[in-house]
Length: 201
Image 1 (tube, rainbow, N blue to C red):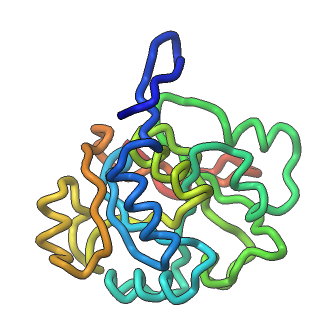
Image 2: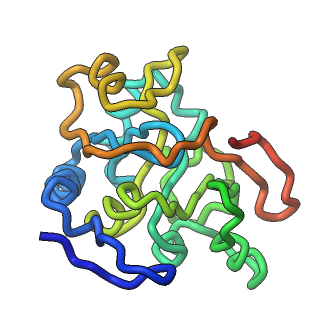
């Protein structure tokens, strides 16, 4: 049922072939909002180019449009259409593995929808190595919106049960899996200066 491939010296499951992940990806393409595990907490995601889906996600969270969101991807290249000019070193930094997830604030591309940036000239992006989140991105075919799965003012969900308690049947799908064990949401840094906007854990 699963495709095995070499990775870091061993065979690993290609989660993009998982039937539950493929189903969730199809619902994303149809404008759905889904929940999925990430490195530390559960996330809510949608197609970043579907404004109706995006606004529905914000309504579920009671999140202001001006806050902007994070885009996650399984690889650096699929983020390129959303990102403005970067130096070679900055592109390499996006790919760096530091033993913990890092979200980078980068220049937004000229065609990046304003609803993703909150009207800013920058965008937050992360290349995720969480197998389920990365598999969902691959099955979907590109980056996904990623914001913590919780209503405004509540603690981010750390289990699928908490996601269900928060959102009941308001989501189009919930991808099974476990978080990566992180204690805090991803660190956020500026790609140009390295300044830490939010410590991670």
